[in-house]
Length: 411
Image 1 (cartoon, helix red, strand yellow):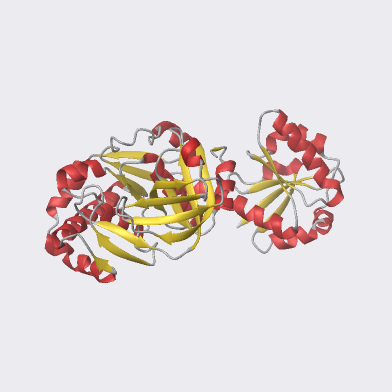
Image 2 (image 1 turned 60 degrees about the vertical axis):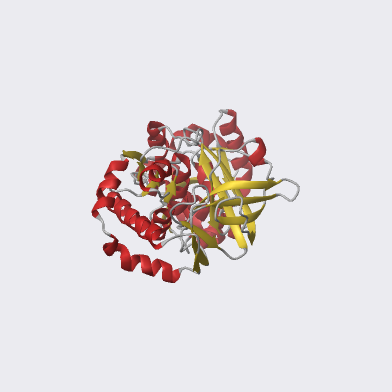
């Protein structure tokens, strides 16, 4: 990894002296980056599209920075270790930037904390670049009950660089009917062998869903899809299945996949994959306890590789096809949603998974989460229904990523 620091100093520029004055920070940064110190007057020598950041070297540079404001990558981030009164200049500059109705952020603290923040900042920078050019397939149409989970294709492309691709269900049906039960029999047996148990479903259900999985995989390959969401409504009507197993296995394959045609949720899952490398679980908030600051989330599909064990069930709402009941150990989790029609708003909270429940009144996979943030967000100001659960605490990383991309936090 490379890091270009744009050096702002009021003194005559000598790279060796700058390095020596801020050696504690630079030495630690060099454990993670190939470090380039570039004087602000030579900013044109920095290659385009590389990772760069303004470094405030002393306390007498505010006016210099303002005169050279155009060299800053946006959103504006100022790195200051406090040496030579540099923090005072960073504060003055940040205040000026914000007075112009723009965002500015100062990275400052102990050397350990500054390096941690720079690494988060770089991860967000790299994730945005990885998102560019990704293709998200909408197979079929969004479920009619999702009235607030759409996305503007043009604005999503302009903000994130992703392309939504509409794919008719007929493309999947064509391959589904070409695939025989014999072709998927061995693979179906392997899934059953990995399951803790099979309940409420039949071998015919399993074979039908495995055929659907194979058909969707073929469409993914032909359309060069990086993520997809399936129209469960159409599948229930036409194939008497919801595609829950197909979605589960696609996630196992490393292809973020969702159901119900939720365009915001699948974008969030793709972000999770690109930013953290982790699997995501699309979940319905089923019950909210404001007093205990807890939420119960549930859904009928989850990647089998995300959980510690799983049970093959039938679908909760329709009692048809296959659903996956995942079981996960207690531990830290993150709840995240990128939403709004323009995909420019978000919610994120750390939390702790306290219990796997098994209520008969909601979907098969059920997790009770103790949230770090107030749970009444879901009742006061929610970004729709589906939210994405991630194993582990990635809230700071996600916060950095969304703020870097000028998104508005919902709380």
